[in-house]
Length: 244
Image (cartoon, rainbow, N blue to C red):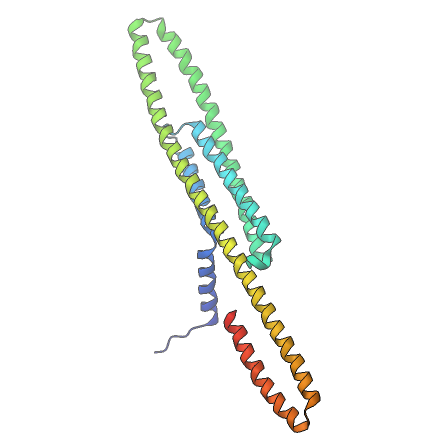
């Protein structure tokens, strides 16, 4: 049984290949994963991640989204080179605005958590002061527990800083890939311009020769010359297509 193969399948496959090669989608997917991870850590209520680290993560996400927005502005100014239509530009800008809204919501939740932690710290300080009046042993035990809690927070902060460093490294690598891709496309366009200029020059020279020969030859000679030049034109056309 012969499977039907529609043009829609070819278009869908071509679009999927283009998305896989576009650095924009690589960065966008990385940012989406980072937003999901940050939201999970904020809403989980775990104490291993400090509020300051969470806020640094959110600010790093804002910076990444701003960088991607600037790359969209660059692509919009040169749509022919990057092969982007109006709908694709609008879709990318919608994603940027939606992501900024998610990060703003995340910052609001982090700020609320910071206020709760501040209130809890004040309450803990008051309790510690009250316990100090109950004896030296009780005070020592409270201080030891506080130190253990601080050590736990420091270890969690070190782990989060390692994650941030890895994320920044990945973004730097993606930025280098984007730069190399833009440079490669620029070289290809310059080479194509040179090839087109060369073909135009050869066609102009052939046209001048044809006009000269037609003036000098008779009717029969003109027909032979036209046939000969037609063959040359076909050969030059295939050469131009092959170079492109």
